[in-house]
Image (tube, rainbow, N blue to C red; front, side, top):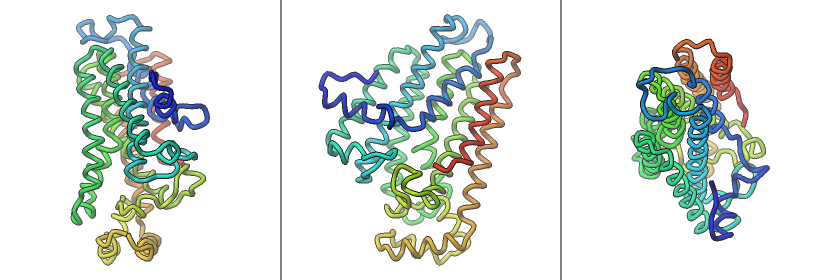
Length: 321
């Protein structure tokens, strides 16, 4: 799908899709497993995209959702790296570092435009609306992060809402789009959404932990990145509950490296890391429960895919990179 007339733009847009730097392919894997988990007989009155369509055609449409999702995700990474002035991503030099900010932004815009073209080809207005909302959420979440007040930065509720917009909305609405294309009921579609939402939140919570506990080599990007950019995440928020004096450090914004060291000292004395892992585990359990709640089906492929989706919830909270 990533085809451009200008070679330089094509090279930039394909940068994170090349062999060796393609990342974990987490989202496409989840979506294709969700497609298999939901591909079971449903009433003939199902909406467009249901069992009335040939199986191979349905699978192709679902694969398109996975491709669109990954393009939106990579586009957001390209834009984020420009905003954060990042130098590395996925263990290599970031695109903005290699080709400059302008081309990196244009490459992200190009990927979004290609995703829109692919989305239109599905000819399903509900799916188009869902994934258009995702792009809105990505922008909203980034703006929330950039413009938060002192009170908002120290609010767990605000943090989780921002995290949903920036991370979980994409996977949750994409899972729901898969269900809609399959022609599933509103109830089943919401279970798919709940799985994606809670999986996405668990994933980001563990990311926040790894930002403090991981290494640059394991993460593929610098550790302590968020706090050095003045971004307050769950471990610090939980630490602040135990040590209210940390609030004054947070309010100063971490411009001084001494404040970063002080915050890390408080974090080390607190249960912030453990409580963040526990919250991630709670969301992982909710994601697994959504899969267990799907209508019973004895098909071996369906059962295998559902087991894999549940297994992913465990992998998300036990990963180290």
